[in-house]
Length: 281
Image (cartoon, rainbow, N blue to C red):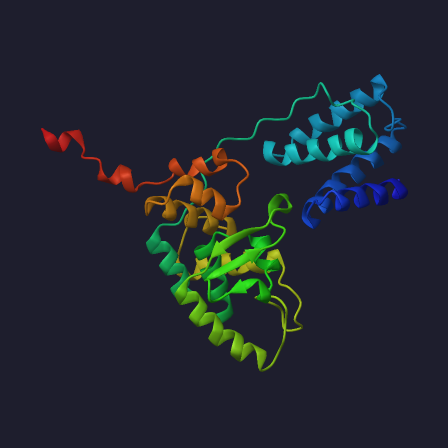
């Protein structure tokens, strides 16, 4: 099993999967293989008992996972069989449908509250960068200082989701404050990353998540928000300001505009302008 996992990890890396996706895929593949071998299931074949075990494994996962997470298990096993073993045992198994939901979005006032409640300079700059660029949390963690172009007011995101590069815009206000922070930071430390630990290494996703949750608590915001909520807020507020969907799609790094269109359902500015019919009577 260990040799197979090593080969699978190498294949995932060569194909450009992110470290997080690789770790998640390997976690489920390892669990699946362990259970199969424990029950003496020939998991490297497309025999009927292998198919039955595969279906049973996915059914068990469905009891505890949401469809979004279940889809991750599905794709991990599909990679195992279709890409690694070259066996099409999953051809008749359908991908579970994703639950339909509206993203949690902060109002502009809540965004201000979030910033004002954050007294730590680095943490505030992190929150402002998330909001002003729409970066994914992993993209912010991996963002390097030399990818910032203060003259053009842009940042070059390298290896975003789907291993795609893109350009995001930087705020004048953020650039001014960040330069001051960086100058002060460099007197004690040095790092290739825009934000880093004291030893110069990149921040973890968990660290950014904790910053967001703590700032929301201090601001008295009751919504259950995450770094991705700030990304949602950036997109929604851009749409409300009149930016077109194609531009927002490019800034967010969405592969399909259908993904970006979710924000047309959460934008409330146009709805607020509608005159209630009762007031017309």
